[in-house]
Image 1 (cartoon, rainbow, N blue to C red):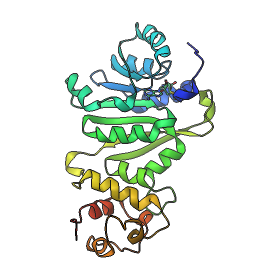
Image 2: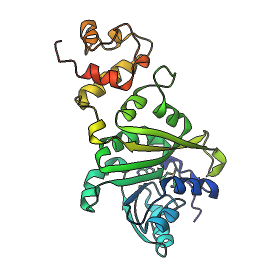
Image 3: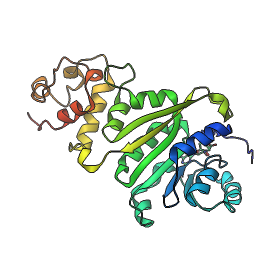
Image 4: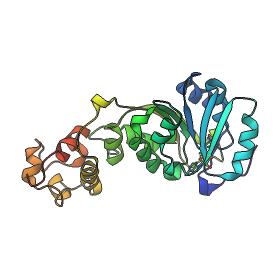
Amino acid sequence: MNSRPKKSFGQHFLHEKRYIERIVGAVAPRADDFVVEIGPGEGALTLPLLAAAGRLTAIELDTDLIPGLQARAAAVGELSIVHADVLKVDFTALAHRHGVERLRLAGNLPYYISSPILFHCVEHAAAIRDMHFMLQKEVVDRMAAEPGSKVYGRLSVMLQLACRVIPLFTVPPGAFRPPPKVDSAVVRLEPLAAHELHDADPDRLHAIVKAAFAQRRKTLANGLRQLLDAEAIRSAGIDPKARAETLAPMDFVRLAKVPAGA
Ligand code: SAM
């Protein structure tokens, strides 16, 4: 216990019991759930999640933490530790391998790669039932932002087209060892059902959203110049003089579905 936290791995260990209890209460694991924890660290969340679910798979990059975690979990339940970079873990294959339809993900994420982890999870959303993540509060604000908000952007659009984003509560720096420089927040993500999902080409959608928000102050006609001309934007029912931050997530889907050369 109490290893020296490594900055390079984004290690900020949760130690305040009431926040640990609130997170575990929000996940509310049941005995037949297949829970996967990202970044178990010293086990602050792992052990109570394991106690509730009976089995748990944890993905940890730091080898030094694994033996201690294994030892602490032995009497609690069936813990399987995957030593890997979470960005390389194929969640869909993991679910298939274990014969489960959908995983439940949880974790106090390493903040240095929080956005890449979110985008990675979205790619595997069909194999995920829900996710409960601790992140920088500023990131949770961006994830849940609505059109017109200053922090509405690529992360808001891409996440909201794949999941319901439900911010739960904030957590102060003092709840961690060492304390991070920023406030944190816990968010629940619920992947949309197949019939709720958009049918635009994902690569085209990514390219449009990325270009539209690359220069937020520009009009869409300017920002999307390389991808769609003003007439094509108009054909999707959208004003080419509008700015990306005023468009709803589904407006980007409409832009992505404009046939090439329209
Ligand atoms: N869950 C613990 C807690 O709440 O006390 C630790 C959380 S700490 C913020 C993030 C954890 O993610 C650390 O254990 C760190 O070693 C691990 N980690 C960092 N980068 C990772 C990666 N790419 N893949 C998997 N785990 C990673």
